Image (cartoon, rainbow, N blue to C red; front, side, top):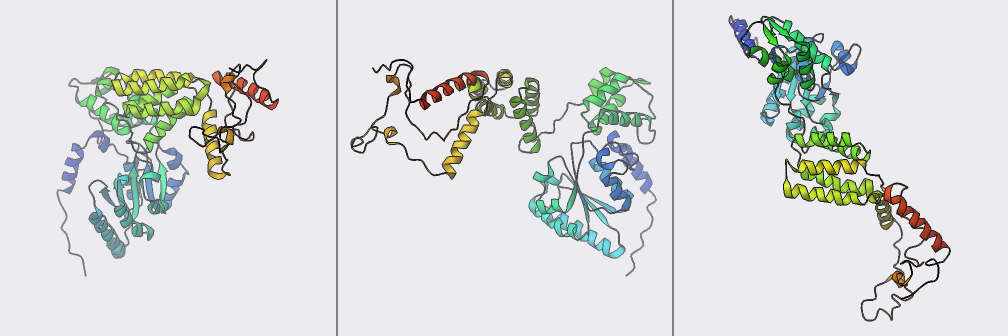
Length: 454
């Protein structure tokens, strides 16, 4: 059956031009070829994997993972154009299983009819539920569609394993300052798509500020440039540092309280505390607070950290951490950030020991996997009638009856040692005391000098 002839649309070019003029600068300046694309040289540079795959037209399904404004969507459009494939976009927020099935069926029909392959572009693929992702599996597996999914989340958390195993994953990095600067200058020079028809004199420090403050997000940098230029009446536009600061929007941190960014930043915070770097610990805490993290989460981590990584090297650390946690509950933000900052700097600079942490882990491992130890008769409870007849408590020596509150007697077989204090902070004092007691125990002694029972 021949296809019905469709007359040419005489006004298509005009409509397209009108739509293009209405687009923001960041959309108009999207690269259209690989040569125009800036950044991601680690997988798209000359001779790199993805560039080779595109050149050979041997693409499988792709997952693009990275922060906003680093080129994920632009590259998907370029790939479709370069490989001469249909480009069908789906927004994971708006599309349901029905829409996914329809697009898959249309792609299959197009392939059967004319051999044209389809790129199914799914923006924010992490928002696709399991059912939606499962619908794509047979289409991807049989090669009837080429999936390109983009996400700001860790794909290993956000995408189903079967779909992930059938896709190549490329992690996009934020654009560096040089790349942002290149894009800004290109937008100022480009007459058809950019701002080249407007006379603009941009100061070097304004360029440097936009390149720094955009945080690797090309869309944010170009939007600030457009706002600054179009909001200035005089010509030529004198684009100064002050105008750049006024034009740029407040940075929106990529931080999901339940996603991988949350865990990555929290991990950096904890490891900075453990590594005794107060500057790094304060920075990562500030990052969490600015992104809206619950300060109680931070306070709980400090209490854990005080025992896990400091312990008896500085027993005061736990008291300070608990005081900070109480302050968070009583005061709240913004003032409690001062209490948290004090606790963070104290814990970061405190001497470190994980001896308590290792001790409880080793003891619990023995309890789970080794023979259960009987409680020695002399240590058993005597606070009930009949305990004496069972021999409980007999031969128990009351340590306070001795001169320095200690007497050599067994509490656990000698080979079971769990707490080994380090030679740092107050734990060095504890270590010295334990070594002395162990020596005296080995000698079978009690208190130095004559034993004095009360």
